[in-house]
Image (tube, rainbow, N blue to C red; front, side, top):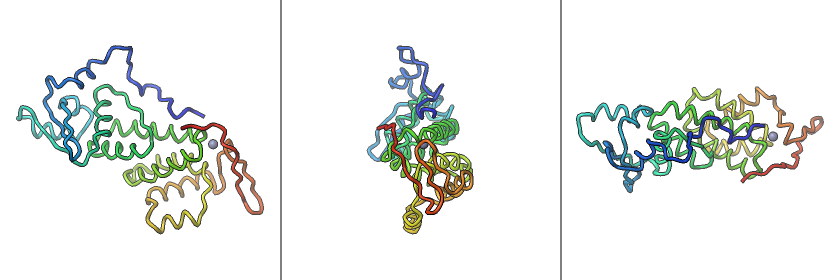
Length: 235
Ligand SMILES: [Zn+2]
């Protein structure tokens, strides 16, 4: 099983010296755009040219304000942590998503800033993470399931194929207790796209399909699935 962290090309080529664009990011000199993030107005001194090269939001904003010398914008609803991580990627091209709760804020920010290339990278890493489900312990799997459900709120119907692709890896690592699942759905805790993903994935792997590496499948009378010890644990 591929390591969920193996992402060839995702890391910037860093041979010790700070890349030029990172030096520019950490220096306010020549900045032509002040971006204030969150209600507390955390200020980032940035460069329209660099932000606009990947973000349609900033491209539109820059075109609309190009006659102004130094432009400013306040985006109170964005999180400083998520914005900071995305901005760093815009300057040096490196990003590693963790797929915990923070990744929901990051994905929302990618959508708001309209960055298609980073959106594709997010999905690439998410699918890779799901392929590594075997290496997660039960708690990490449950935490990820909650995150994935939250992310489904922000995915688009066009993402369904990718959702199903991830869901195949997810559902084959869970024993779904139908009553609890229905109860959660009735309480509105399960996102529609998540449910459609479960159904699509089940159709693909069959009703009783589970990961052969993590479960021993005892079919027959009661169709009980017995969970084997999960050997590899990851924090
Ligand atoms: Zn497995």
